[in-house]
Image (cartoon, rainbow, N blue to C red; front, side):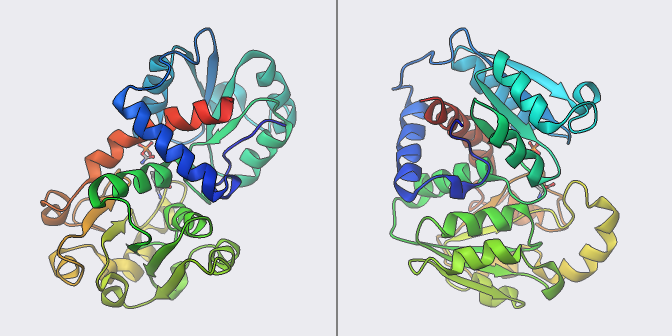
Length: 300
Ligand code: CP
Ligand code: NVA
């Protein structure tokens, strides 16, 4: 079985630090330019995407490879044939498989049966490429620190779960401000709490979450595949809106993050998203660099 990135916890703390170094070298153009020369990467999407699709395709091209954009219309993963058989077949053609889909179990199954690396480009449970890129962005803006104080306010979704996954590997002071009905995944939370180097707080008080934080993060209240819950989520999460008053409760040097796409003036106000502390487009750019680093790292 090849090394895959199904969740951040697939990598050790040392490997994560190695990955961030590789990402920095990639961004500066200091690495071997074409490690994917003559190779193809299957990019499977069963959900919509702008950043993930384009940054993977551009990244694969920059590494010398060819990206194959595959939607569920063609392959009907798990319906036309089993996920395991699709994994075995794709492994005969491509060097890496990237997948964005609903069920985490499909990504895990693909990785179990593929003989090439599988990269999770988002599931309902986690979004590892995003949070690895975001941690790299935090390092660029805040400098290397022993422990960032990260406040995530909003839905306990795949983004919140991925921050927790990171906290189970690297020291983080992670506060999640959310409604009691929108908590992150219980098992992922337990795993993060087991890392004595990290501090985890789940609170219903948004001000408590952001107090002294140096990273403020939010995401849409209803994720892809949950759009039928939009009104219910809005009702529960309105008080966690990332706005000027919440920003004022954080460290004055705090950076503002959002994985995008944003629903402006719902989970984040224009004032904050377009304000001087916002690094949201740096985050989007760094998806390109981190994913190139992930693909190269897993290939070796
Ligand atoms: N942040 C992110 O993954 O964006 P897309 O859904 O557009 O890929
Ligand atoms: N939580 C969001 C992230 C989008 C990048 C979603 O899953 O729709």
